Amino acid sequence: SLTVLQALEDGLKRADADPSVKAVMICGEHGKFSAGADIRGFSSPKRQGTALGSIISLIERSEKPVVAVIEGIALGGGLEVALGCHYRIAHVKARMGLPEVTIGLLPGAEGTQRLPRLIGVPAALDIITTGRHIPATEALKLGLVDEVVEENTVEAAIHLANRV
Image 1: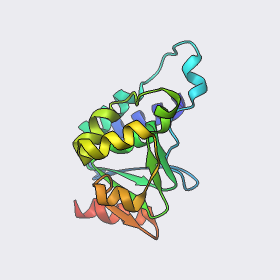
Image 2: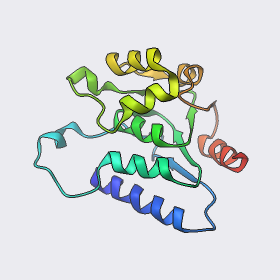
Image 3: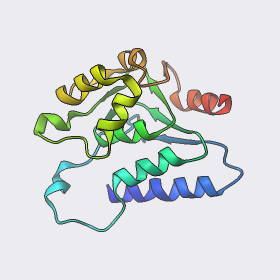
């Protein structure tokens, strides 16, 4: 939603400007990272506000490490946000993917560029063209996530941020 995008932008800008902040974690509420955009909004008139692509670029450009804490699902725009982060930690039960292709849409926030850079073209093409949801263990093997944990993902992200 526009509210979430604005909150991400504001939080990232505050964190970058605050010298006491050493790293940033992006996580979702209630055990879900992000299911992506609400496609019902695609047919409404263009609204003013922050675009997902510019938020992801802001994440990517941050001078402080940004860690995506993926619990539950990171689909569509949610996965694209995670791809913009410098590090990704996933709970063992997490799933990731770009399912918008199953309804004829291409990932619109440069996920089609970031994913191949991260995991290679063959694996990325499979994920991009099929829309399948991959489990965290496969994401780890592909290099999509840096760690998979069975316990508290936020604590694991804090430990990773302290290491880097």
